[in-house]
Length: 158
Image: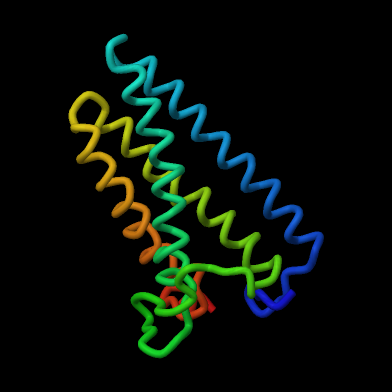
């Protein structure tokens, strides 16, 4: 595997651990959904659970399309502010890239779910769909500051 974390390759054991941790983080979606549905009026329970589903579905789509590239891209045009490249993660990548992709996807979608609780009963569902798509991308830029090889915080900490 060629994906590196702080200069060390991600081997099969690392990928297994990363995917296990990703599963645990994804279960937070269910917990937040139950917490939020308990905090809203009965008539809005289905709405809030659908918002949690949208976070994973559209958040996953936006992270796959743009988020991973903004967080980890190292192509021309990349800067300490955001990466460029690695958009539309594809099958040419190895298991280390996919393990990292799933792990960071779980954080990006969970961050959006936390916000959905603050917006419960306050936002139209169609507007929330757009928010979910955009917020996942927005998460990736500051996440890349520390976790991406190009990030200025990562360079600063070293």
